[in-house]
Image (cartoon, rainbow, N blue to C red; front, side, top):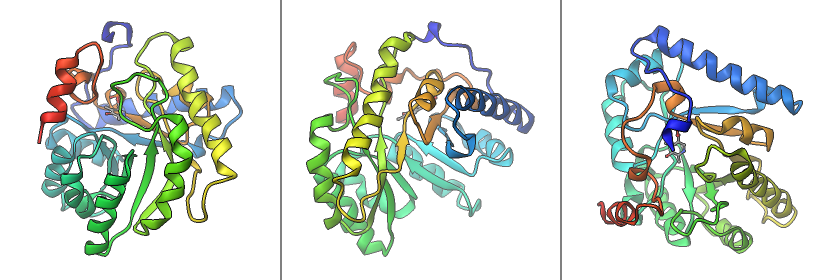
Length: 267
Ligand SMILES: *Cc1c(COP(=O)(O)O)cnc(C)c1O
C-alpha cells in the first residue's frame, strides 16, 4: 500500500519543516480552490507519532504549535518532556482505553476519537476532577471495515443525544479515517458519508452539541477530504517524513488480525 503513496522527505531542520509545511499548505490551497473554499477554513493538525522530541522541537520552531498523537502514552510522555513549550497543544487522535482517561484529562486539549459512552463517562469524570474541559470529536467508522474504531453511522444520532450529560466534553464535530487505498473512488465516499451524516444530524443535535468540525484526511488523501468538506486535516508523513512503523501498529487493520489483537492488548 505504501509504495503507491508519494514519497515523503524527512525533515531534519527548521528549514526542512518550513519547506514541507509550505508544500502541504500549497496542496491545501489547491484543493480549496477546486471547490471554492477558503483555505482559512481548513485547520492543519500536524501528527507527530513516532517522531522524536528533538525533531518535534524543530517542527515547533517552524510553527507547529499544535500536534496530534495516536497513542496516549506516547503523547503524554512527549507533553511532559516539552512542557517548557507552554503554548504547545496536544490532540489525541487515536482510540482511548478507559483506563487512560485520567492521563488524557491532564494534558490533552482535544480528543478526536470518542466512540463510546464508557469513554465519555470516564473522560468527563476525570476532567471534572481536574477542573478542565476538553474539545472532542466523535469518531465514525465510514469505511465499514469491521476492525476500524468508531461508531457505525447509524449509531451516531443516539450517541449525540447522550453527550450533554457530560458537561466537561465540548463536542465540536465528527472525525473519520477513510479506507486506506490509492483509489479515490474508494476513499472519497468515506469522506462524503461523514459530511452527509453531519448535515443530517445538525438539525436534531441537542443544544450545546456542536457539529461544525469534520476531521478527515491524512497525508495521502487530504485533498479529497477537503473537497468533501474537511475542516481539520491530520497530516503526519507529509510534514515529518515517511514513517517506518507500519500503520497496523496505530490502527487495527483487518488484513493483519494479529496486529489488532496486539493493539487491544497493549496497556
Ligand atoms: C497517523 C495518523 C494520521 C496521519 O497519517 P499520515 O499518513 O502520517 O499523514 C491521521 N490520523 C490518525 C488517526 C493517525 O493515527
